[in-house]
Length: 354
Image 1 (cartoon, rainbow, N blue to C red):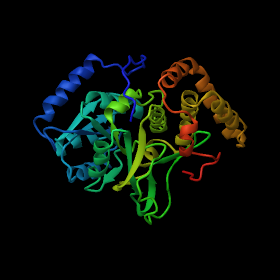
Image 2: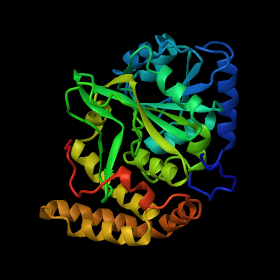
Image 3: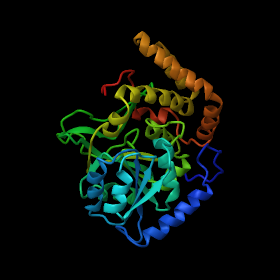
């Protein structure tokens, strides 16, 4: 059974419920009673958007076609400068819009959305996702039927090659490097059995809201990338489980919004920076020492090693705050590293390159 924790959360920058958030929640509640897929939603689908106008119609048409109807949709906009918000308000009035006014990053914007709503389950969606009509049915049923599950990952296929997998849940090796399970493989049904996985990608997964908040939500120092890995690690340590539901299928324009703003190499560097912080928070001391030593000794080009050292420096600057978060996790963990070893790949390399 999951551990239901009751405690006062440590203060985290940008995470308190402000008066503006209370006003936003009241506004969303009033709007929800006027129109939406359900007047009594059990699920809120949260889309974190930044200049995703060209992808939004495909996503929202897919949500409108869902066979399960007891959900509301909230779009948290990170200061977009394209016409996406005007489009949503004119063509999809059932979508509630929360404008942040600036780019808060994915982690902070997603946390904002989760705190604004009150439904027991929340789904997180990238704008560049297209769901099958029955996508929502399957992960919702898992969460409703098993209180030990905190997150459910779907089967993600590549939108431009729909017979090829983007992934079915996520994997992590002992150095903290991660990849999407099955990415780049032809979908032959090899991942069609539900399974426990290390993490559920935030691009299109469903979460138990109570567990999400009990784990502290996404780390808002992770502007984007690796926040889903970090959260799932905490959930596993707190006694919850993360699983796949392969009958839930979505199509992903992989890197769609990222490629329009940044390179995929930037994504890799940012992910490593965040990975070091996740290692510092979660591993037991002996495993932490081994992982950090192996990272430093990892053979890399001089330029790449310099970037890695910058990532270590960033973490050194934030070390006091990271240690505070480490105490938050370690004092509440109910599982040892050894108990989670079956979820961690005993390798130093990553089988998938972006």
